[in-house]
Each structure stands twice: as C-alpha cells, then as structure tokens.
Length: 268
Length: 286
Image 1 (spheres, rainbow over the protein chains, first blue to last red):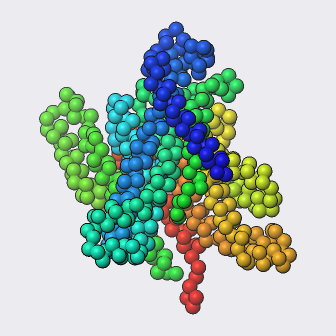
Image 2 (image 1 turned 180 degrees about the horizontal axis):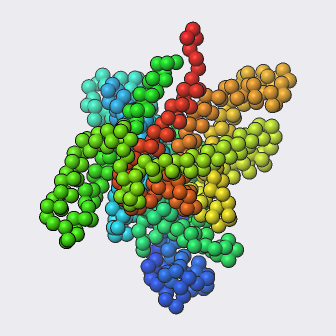
Image 3 (image 1 turned 180 degrees about the vertical axis):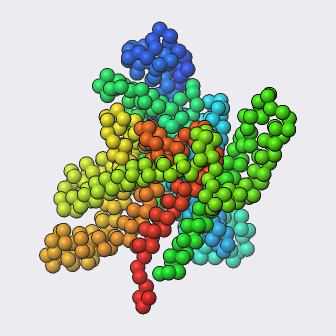
C-alpha cells in the first residue's frame, strides 16, 4: 500500500510538472487558432487534434490542467483558513461561540454541496473576463468548502481545551492569541493538512461539474472542467477517442491525489 | 420519543428558515438585483418608470424582503418565474414528481448494487473480488457527475443509471467500512466459533449492529441523489427540479432559485431527520 501511495504521489508530481512546464512553452499557446485545421484529427502538428475553433487540444489540455492544479490548492487554502476560524477557534473558546459554530456548520452541511455551489455561483456575475471567472469559481469553492473540516477541527479543538499542556500554558499567563498560535495550531496542523489534500480533488471535480454546466471558467481560458464540455459533441467512442484525453487526465490526477492521501490520519 | 420528534421538527424549520434567509441574502446581494429591463423602454413615461422602481424599493431591506417572501409562500403564493413567465408553484408541482421518480430509481439501484457487493465480499473472501469492487467504486468517485451524464447520453443509457453510478460508490464505501469494522467484533468471532452460517451471521449479527448508521447513510444519500440530479437532468434534458435549478441559475431567475433552494433544503433536512429518528433506540421505560 505504501508503494502504491508513493507511486500515486510521484504521478501527481509528474503531472503537475508536465502541465506547468509544458504550458510555459511558447509552442503551446491555448488561444492560437489554426484556421487551416479546424476540428482536425491528431497529427504531428497537433498531437490531440484541434477543436471547432482550430485551437490545439494538447496545448489547451496543458493549460487547463495547470489552471485546475494551481487554483484548486489555492481554494483549499482559503477553505482551511475558514475552517480554522469557524471550527477550531470557537471549539477552543467553548461556550456560546462553540454552540453557534456547531449550529452553523450543521446548517451548511445539511445543504447539498453541488446545489449550494450552483446557487451561489449563479448569484455572481457570469459575463466576466476569463481571469475574473476563474477567480470567482475557485473562490466560491474555497468559501463554501469549509464546513466538513470545520466540524472535525471543532471536535479536535474542544478535546484540546482540557489538555495538560494547555492548562500548563494557561497557568503561566500566556495571552489567548499566543496560546492559539503557539500551542493549538501546531497540534491541529496534521488534521488541517490531511483535509487540505482531501479538498483538492473534491474542488477539481466540483469545478469540472460547474464548467460542464456552463457556470465555471469562461472561454477562452481552459480548465479541466471547461475542456470536458467538448464531450457534449462527441458522436462516437470509436472515432473520437482522443477527445477523451481531458477525462483521462482528470481521472489520473484525482485518483493519484486520492490514493496518495488515502491512509493519512484523518480523524472522524 | 415525542420530544425527539418535536426537537427534530424544530431543527427542520430552523434549517429551512436559515437556508431561505441565506438564499434571500444572496439573491438580494447579487449584482443586477432590482434591475428591470422595462426601465430601459423609452416608450414608458417617467411616472411608470418611477412606479417600477418603487415596486422594487420594498426589496431593498433583506430581512423584510425575506419575511415578505416567507409570508407569501405560507399563503401559497410562490411568485412568478421571470425567465419562464409562469407561476413558480406550478413549475415546482410539475417537476418535483419527475425528480422524485428519477432520484428514487437511482437510489434504489445504487443501494441494491452496493448491498449486493458488500454481501458478495462478505461471503466470497477473495482478494481479486475485493480489489475489483474497490477499483470500480474508486474510479466512479473520480468522475464528475456531468461526465457520467454525457457518457450515458453517448451510450444510450437511462438517466437514473447515472444517479445510481454517482450514489453507489459513496454508499458502497461507507457500507463496506461499516461491515469490515463489525467483522472483527467479539460477538461475530463467537458466532463463527459456534458454527453459525455466513448468511445467518450477516443477517442476525452484522445488520442489527450497523442498522442505525445505515439509516443515517440512507438519509445522506437522498441529498447526494438530489444534488446529482442537477447535472443529470440539465445534460440529459429531463424536465425536473435539477433542470429548473440550472435554467434559473443561467437566466438569473432569482425568485425561482430562492424557492427551489428552500424546497431542496427542506427535502434533504427532512430526509436526514427522518433517518435519524428511525435509527434512534427507544429509551428504556419509555
């Protein structure tokens, strides 16, 4: 199992490196149109063919993977910060703050995730520039994905309240802010890290769902989700098999991330 | 028992009200709220335009706006959809049955498959079977619901099968984890030592232990199915609540979104509370 995890982590690192390095090469411009080859099959010039606007599918796949792989962790960071603020801090403080945080977490968790995402994304502007749309999409993911880790952080922080080292630190007259930063946060770091890695594939999949529905990243900027929209026009599995490349890439990334974090300590 | 039911009902009401308030706040804060394209009509007089502006003025206060819409909802007036130009109540009535049928069939298929798989792995202790079942559910977990819906269209498969494929891996994972946790318990080892058959052990010694968690999982799976119905209905062209949500989102039909949000939240919270209530052990002496 350990070997499998190492292999999965290596694959994930290779995919990140290839997508970042490849997308920086000037040869792979995601928006350049080749009007001579519109909707063409794979060729030495276009390894995965071109789309209906004559853009190189391989270049778009590299850029799309880079967008998803760089922004999903960024959204996960936002999500973990919120989870710490909403879950760990009130959990450690106790009393009314803890009860209010627990109720808020339960309320958010009772709403179906994709439904909530769709509603909130729909409230925000849709006809924006590609850069703004990608920021909004991943920011919404980050701002809404805090509830599950917050619940676990709250439980962990609550159990830490009566720990001996906390009582000892309190008896020395330490300031609450310092107590939180120096003693509570380092002990919650493994939980935060585990949930960070769990959130990344979830956010990649959620972005894919939003983009397939037309509520994600705007054209011409590619993301793994927006590239998957092309599957709507696939007529046959046999003749258009190379158009499934974004799906293969998505499955490779998500599965390698899931396997790599599968045995990490995630308290329930 | 009665107090438990009342407490849960209260929780359902609070959740729906809070969900509606959050939804109304989002609607109110969304860009373009209160804008009416009729204000751009040069044929209208200034008095008419003023009247249109005044009609939206009441909606500027979020709390008043929300409670006004709740009062309307309680009177049975769900408002009119701006994009479809039809009463929201009529739209919800028409489409709720479609989604219920789709999600119901999908859930039944997912639970049946997951239960069969768990049952099979309990009986046939084969590493190959265990690995293939884990691989199948692991692969399905890596596929977005939208992609599964597109593949179903391409392969001419029914939409409820997509719901089943989305719900199945989650249900299977939790079910198999629960069963594996019970497998090593002392009462199972004792029953096995006494020569109890595998099916008897499963039905009499495993199922009662995991019953409560299974009921809770059933409640959660309803939420997953409703959530999955959005991309499935939108991409497969099925006129249900999911497609309505998607259309409302794209057309920024905010009153419709608000009502759909309250309906969906209500259904999910009721399902979860119902499952919890069914799984509760009756108190001794009650």
